[in-house]
Length: 334
Image (cartoon, rainbow, N blue to C red; front, side, top):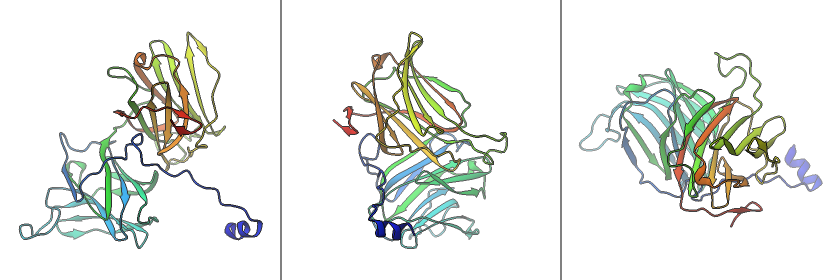
């Protein structure tokens, strides 16, 4: 019906903000496919998340498997595969994502969700580990919860293969208490970027909580006793507030944004906030899309602490390094 009305009245469909491949969002690398890695250190811990990002280059399929060992493909030396404790199989042509497990050669009951991708599309698939299950996010949306067939401690390898160009494979996060605060090693400076990911708390998602109506969350970057940056998405206003507090005095709020309001107040929608520290300002990206900027009020190298708080479930917080430190003007990188 919407398409018919647009045709009759000559209305144009609103264009979406599309993800961008560039160094700020961290999608400028390429990993070899097939990809096989052994988990380093201890076994998987509840709260950890796997993040797999890349580009689809064909119309066949690709897989992401948690396995109990390195035997992941049959050949003249391997006639029996290790357990696939979680198998995510994406059938691009069928527009389906299949979830299953194979223990001692026996497949379990397969589940499937619809998702449309085409050759050339970028993808973001995440698996958050819990004590009893995995949460599977596709392009920032929770699509399935998959119960463990074996404990998390049974997972030793990650295997990825198929018609994709692999841009990023990473593990991060834990169970966080809020407010979360941490010292910034070596302080902040141009070229570093802060990543914060999570979901909003809502009714029915977290049984240990009372009924929750999420309103906002914030990220503060502190320089001693001053707040060099206060970044706060406010759901009721559908605005992202940026301000600072120097000597106990708050600056005027900035609420305009180039990327609209990308946050959703559902517990199934994941957000990724990247705060990129440039020479003269911070640039903010949400789910790979440039949102806004904020000029520095102190020298970035004096910023020594981060605080995150609000109506969210925090999935991950980490710092990264970046060579590109250009500034933003009128929504464009300079």
